[in-house]
Length: 161
Length: 161
DNA sequence: GCGATTTTGTCTACATGGAAACAATCTTGG
DNA sequence: CCAAGATTGTTTCCATGTAGACAAAATCGC
Image (cartoon, rainbow over all chains, first blue to last red; front, side):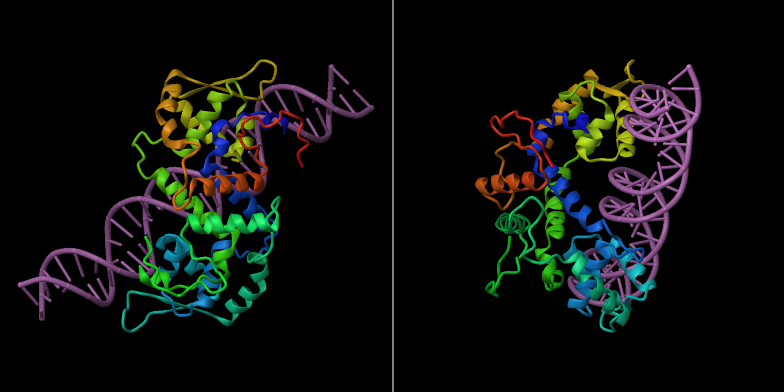
């Protein structure tokens, strides 16, 4: 192990892209450590979760919100339909789109895996204090222009960008 | 676009994994925006950079330090050798390992692309102030237990972990 | 020394994700 | 109406990354 630690990273250790990659790998490592053979992966979980909160939403809109490509969403949805976790419905007023809804099995599986994928809001990250974790999340949200789930964040028309 | 923004993210917007994924995509988006057809991708660049700073290091050690799998490192090195950017050398005292060195072409290409991949240390991230960027990077380094390139960080034997 | 284990790099599948072309549907301009 | 363009989802192909078996070489235990 010492051979690797002797490698000089140089300015790479201060690169945001490199730091973010390391951080993401570490966070996901803990998450993916104990995956059941029924295997609900993060992507599939997030789709189930959003479908539950937004029943009837079109899959393209979900894809855009999750920042995944529509092609990838197609694959995810096909897998979820094959496992009878969601149903597809083509609305009459626009037969291009596809609306998604949870099946009972999908709702049950979502509930069963919620605690695994949604760490408590106050759960501190490894090596960080609770305050540092909060600061980090706030900065990441600001960087990505994501509306943080604040305790009443003014429902005004944010003329973003 | 408004269709996607109407999607309620729920607690997903406070998930470290989701935030880190969004942040990484955003940072890499800027980076990958204008890639030459000669195409030096981030992975290949980081290998070149580390080989330059650590001439003669074994490729497995580089892989471990970059947190990529040895199999992946094999592919990267093969591509770099095929482009005549690095040379492989099997040391006499341990003929399992492979030492890497830059060719002149590799050194030239590295120099040409350095500014693209290594943003200035003080370069603030989008939507963040310089101070916020510094805080974010410090927290990410602490989270990943990465030794930050500080202005003289005590060369003691850190009994890490 | 010599067999068993470990280390190092490679190879072969396989999974994941992106790019671009495509078909179906809707919208727009005349 | 209807042809041209835009939107939505799908498909195909390719790049990237992982998992596990494997071969060569070193090390360890006796």
